[in-house]
Image: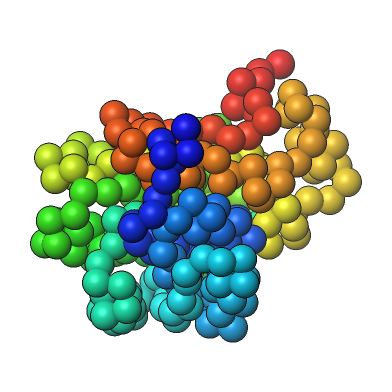
Length: 256
């Protein structure tokens, strides 16, 4: 069974790999043999993640880039190609959130969140998938979505819209890239203690989430590793593309 999930010889690019959830998934890919490029706007955090992977016997290197800046992504793609020769796995895990009420939302905040959560992912897929095709590499793109992408949550209007758009991008690109042997899927995490949602998790919010989560708890970042490794493996998920995979403790199965 280990061979089914073996990523030895594969190169993974983890965009937002310096975040809480992104780093957990990047470490999971490394643990199964992938060589991982940790890409983040905060280079210090990216270097900490890469150092931790190396400390545990893996291979990783930190890179700085801003997903909302196409030129920055083109530059980091060149640097990663020089470092690893190419890549087989693209993990898109950047994220930005806000609790600004709808009628108080201004254009700058809307653009800021959409630039990171949606436009940045489109740019990343354009640049990195095109290189994969040019290199003749088959592989996997894994986008990190949200439970708010399917049933919009209160207090996070722009975030919910951006993640709904990301689901559409995922399924469109699954069709677009299938002829090249590139699979595109999304993971839909439930509620995890990530930076972007801490500020909206007051006691009332936590109680509401627990009522709507059959497992009655938050997820641990490491619980996303299984889905990420599965989707990254050409053996384990070779016929899976265009899928939205929930890792949410049953949140998406609840109604009233």
